[in-house]
Image (cartoon, rainbow, N blue to C red; front, side, top):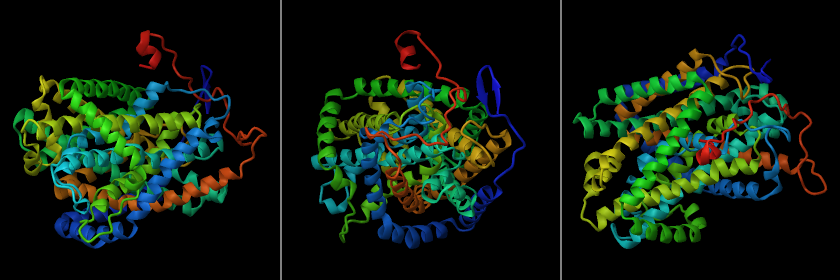
Length: 550
């Protein structure tokens, strides 16, 4: 560490790689990719029919319980004395404004997903409700049911696991002096010696494998939607070459951002993208059926709140269910658990100087509310056009897939071409920031002795960036959207159990922590509390937007 202008920064040293973490991840995916290339149909049949269906039916219910538990825990931390704990110690100074932090959280989390599914899920669920509900497709009941399901998939439940893991890792790394790797979460359970054990290496390898599959899958979603845009604007139909070309361009963008660093790369892009998000959301709300959207949102929120626990634990163990909860609800839960360790680790880099209560609000509460509002606006717009104005978006879905629906929806709005351009910018930047953040995090975790301020060498960032891109190309070309979903959920199932176990262990550890007479937690003796060790948040006062952090 050296001190420059009063700020202590991590100096680059000779990089010692954590070869097992990298080798295990790459080897598993090479084996998987070879199997897909040799016989894609057979591979996905085995994975879907023999593995995933049995796993989701036999263990998917655990993901429902775990996800609900994480939501309850987020609320508890936000409302209890635990929320007063300051990450980095009582004298720690934040290095990001609230708005910068929120922008990073939104764009590295649900950003690209809400754009892809914002119009698709409400329409699809309305026209194809779960068979076990007995709801007629396209009916009033189907509309309400579909919106509640969307709020479940993109509201408070999915992100809770990532945020709780972010809380655990932030506390261990910033307040207990843990190293910057996902296996630091094992320290409260097994002590500091576990950090250098083979168990820690194994956990980091599992985390890297799961995260790689999840990010590559998200990159695949984006490539499919962008290829539809290329078709709409240039008349070039989606093809393997188009998919590969789009992913290659994305690779160049997110690696350039990763190389530029957290402050100049992710922070700048995320905050510009948040402005585009709100601009597009406001446009669709005002240009679309505004009154219908407000009414639909109000009634849907009522059902979402009153039926939250029942919907959270829905498993539909009936002969006519078609495994709908396993294919949708539980798929999303395990998909998010695949992101949990590495996304939680990335959160450490932006949480310094904030309390756990602030952490929960910025990383969980606000993104969840944004997701709910987004689906109400986009879902209300496409459903109104489908059910009231005679536009047959369902036929578009059947012919072109979910990736075509959002672009098609803009055709019913005035100056829809402008909205399409904004949407494409949002998709691109969201994917860039998500892949960028995970590239940086994986690269740092692949080094011995890295901390939350360490910038990994460029070649390590390029390595993980290439891995993401290659896997995404194979997924999309040989598996399509169903193949992407299968791989992502397969990666998340084991982490569901691991994350639940670690969370319970962390709560047990915190229950034994010393407290003051007033009930406040006492800070750890080994706390990393050095006021000059982080860059303070930039002071801005350029009007209202400046005060908000823009």
